[in-house]
Image (tube, rainbow, N blue to C red; front, side, top):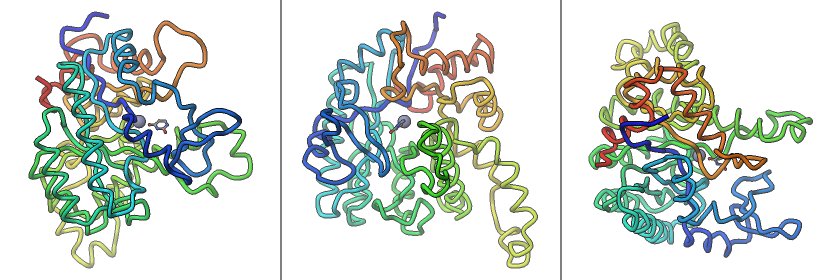
Length: 356
Ligand code: URA
Ligand code: ZN
């Protein structure tokens, strides 16, 4: 289907070669190791990893995917688990070199690539804040990518009061946070048959609940009262947030303790208001139902197409990857083929992320 506006993929990962070298040098997760004679990138505990194929790190493979699928622009982000695991003393310098390398890759392909920078969340606060203000000056950076751990991989989450200065700096620099899952839910959640359920527990259920919980905690901590212009781009259509927002609000409205201690009357914004003002949802939902929910909750002007490339590799040779076809068709089936479709497929990203 021809598109008048550029097609923009806002959910597209790349592990730049410098990051691959970093994982090669490690001996514990996350790392690159040999399993059954194959080099694999293992980024989560309990996972056997992904084969270390060029699609993970090679920019020409990314561009070939874009060309084959009619994607004009990709906003590339470092894949999980980003830099969460770095010792504090090398976190900022490592982040700076990876962000510079990613920005340079984008600059080398004018008009095709932009990026979300990775943050040294385990670094001392001053160094972390300095990297935020530094990446804001890089030509192709349009936001930052972040997991749910908070300050370091054993962090206290995104509602940690110590995250406030980070959010304030991001707000000041007008950098949205692309919130992406990595850790899922605790293994006990899945029971003894888990291994038989393939990647559904981790990627379909764990990932989406992780995003839902992480963002809900930011909201419940009142962060959007303190940083009212902060923007979050939520992965995978917001996890389950569009479906659960009503129930979350209902629990708040019916909370006697909150009423008695004044929190109910003091709160400035409902979740619905935050979703409409502070949240962008990607469209990596693979179906009309999720896409329609995303559009209904944040508005069609705040939903942006994505593929999650290079994950979800087709199991068989196909002309187009399903992550392209299903997410594109989901947009068309949810809003029809007119202007709203163009907005989701690229117009919103060009406008909101200044991709001109
Ligand atoms: N698997 C991952 O590790 N990350 C994603 O983003 C998707 C699948
Ligand atoms: Zn992803």
